[in-house]
Length: 483
Image (cartoon, rainbow, N blue to C red; front, side, top):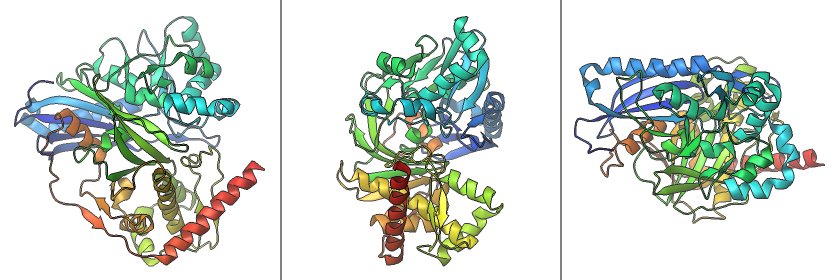
């Protein structure tokens, strides 16, 4: 990118599980304007989770136009834009017209589990090539399902006009209309079809999942010029990446002594490893940034049932005001006598069971069960942190961002259980801020507007005892399922 001036502004576009957002930052990391548009996934009993492509794209156009209107005359200072999306969302499209064929399939979707089960013997091979574990949450099995179950997809393949791959690739093309469609390596890696070493599509993986290579877009670094935003006065799009990857950079360069947790629909735990790829037996190895010359990786754990678990609980028990009631319930009870075995959207690391049966154990009081859901999220995060300690030096602190970070009770429980101080920045919407940091060429001076909050660890025998009861119940259920 060109020289960055003092008045330059940066447009960060964040397409998340519950909303599309656009925020404009200045070179000091201050938010100058923002816009928000809710989106809603369609969920079905058979594990299908998907979005309508048209409304999803329209939500991005809406927030981009809205945030530029709010800027007024200052919009002329917007010099660069970046887009972050849900990494493992995939879709199909017509390469000739750009029209979507079928839905956007969410990372939470598990429609490909039958193919994944058939490939179980190849689990170690897939992990070594991709850094990911065989799971229906990633894109390969979803794309295979589309080829077998959506007639128009198969017809487009026969007529040599089919495109498929990361949702980010299609959105990038729709926002810029620059030919041809390309896929950034961060989102492409979540298809489970990309070689983590070569950062390109892998023929052996394509053969394994029975997916033709021709419809896939070309893989490119995620920092480059992708085109110019057609609905944003020709602003160049310089960055396309994953939401969790961008969130890591929200407060500057990554610190090796910090465990980064970002919470949203899912929750993700990351330990930076720089240019080195660290492999764990039960953890992910993820590429988070690639410029063409330099590549950065993290060791990653994933909790699928974070915000998704609370959303499920609020719907199942008809509690529309759950968000406002949770803080008092969390303060009232630490170490709930109720337990929640959390398999919402499938059980991620370090257990990896796509169809784990979620259920409550113990008392049925509503507030105790609500606390149990939150504590299950903390327990899953703690299990991932414990797994990471086997491969990397123990972190000295935790930084937590995202929607669930607003819950003091969650942050304090995390500090107490991990035995580490937890830092929560004031601005918890980390994805957009991370986009801006990367667009601004990673400035050394990237201050927060005001300091955040620290949660210091303290002894909590009740929470520790509940964690051990929960872990025993989870392992017991896994053993029974395996019998």
